[in-house]
Amino acid sequence: MKNETAVAALAALAQDSRLAIFRLLVQAGPDGVSAGRIREALGVAPATLSFHLKELVHAGLIKNTQEGKFVIYRAQFDTMNALIAFLTEHCCEGNPQGCGVPDVACKPAATKRRGVSCEPA
Image 1 (cartoon, rainbow, N blue to C red):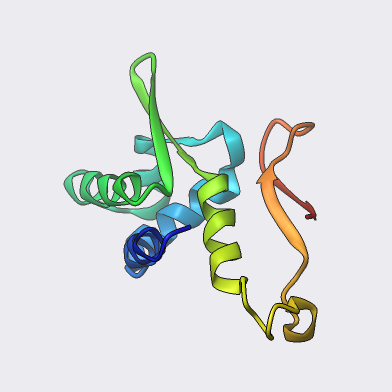
Image 2: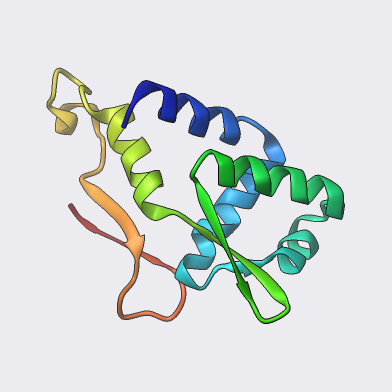
């Protein structure tokens, strides 16, 4: 991951509502969540939600797809994991075990309909 990409992702997450949206989408896993359900869960006004979703899409942290009359938003786990790897790449001089960094990667669970699994990398 390039510095510019990491800065864009971190900047997008450095706002309470966007961080809450992203965490909700990570929790939802590969099924994602409709914009309406995000709004209901977080109590964000529609125009404000739209702005925050666009910022997260622009940062590459989430994607949206049209499914019937709904727009479904999903976390981009590859981007999330790349950001985590970027942040911990040189931890403790390349020995992340010394820093207590967990040796896991989160990804959508292949066997579960909802959620994510964290398995050894």
